[in-house]
Amino acid sequence: MENLVKAMGAEAVDWAFKTECCGASFAISNAEAMMRLTGRVIGDAILNDCDCIMVACPLCHANLDMRQQQINDAYGTNFNIPIFYFTELLGIACGIPLEELKIGCHLTDPFTILKAKQLC
Image (cartoon, rainbow, N blue to C red; front, side, top):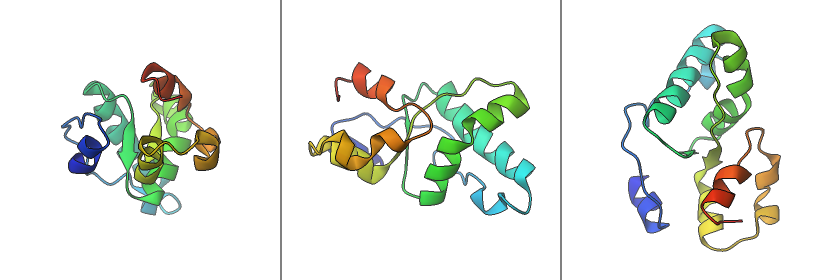
């Protein structure tokens, strides 16, 4: 993944939980474990000054994007970090319009970081 990030002209941040499971498989059987695991991934990314999180797993994308407010409510955190599926960032790097990539369908605002990086 780091090579892919670099090939797109971005900087890959080395952080401890970059390959950790978000716990999506626990979403039904043990929601508390899933929220803890997801919170650890997001929290460590923020602690290491990541601007966003890029994932290759569709379940990680869904879990990390849609559970941030639920985790904030449960644990008193203030997570608000954009989550991108790697193909979305590849599309942006290739100049595909954001509307075609459906970037606006994210639950966590992706546009603040895209504007800051002059990508939209």
